[in-house]
Length: 111
Image 1 (spheres, one colour):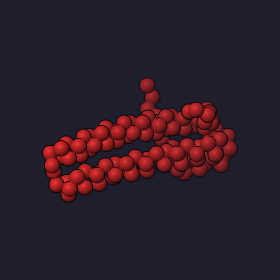
Image 2: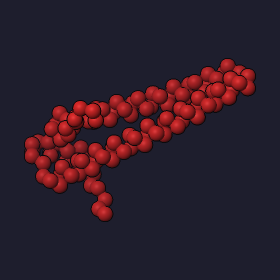
Image 3: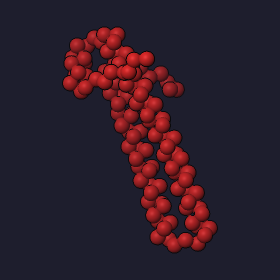
Image 4: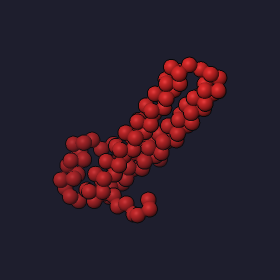
């Protein structure tokens, strides 16, 4: 199995200026997109697990009568995870929109 190539921003600019992609260039772009989507899915799963663990900790602390300061700390961690997930989702959406605008990706309704 071949390792996927990586396209530098300069190469990407050259490719886009060509207006025509070779099959190899298109394959590399699609591989990068697939890798990005897989990474996003893994991050979402990771943050979901982290959020579940933090919620469980918060519930346990509430039942154990822990101090509000500790509850605030858990809530702050939870918020930070949610913000990171949102940032990753926004970056992926920007990337997908960029590919779509360049005509390199077609997104069907319901995907």
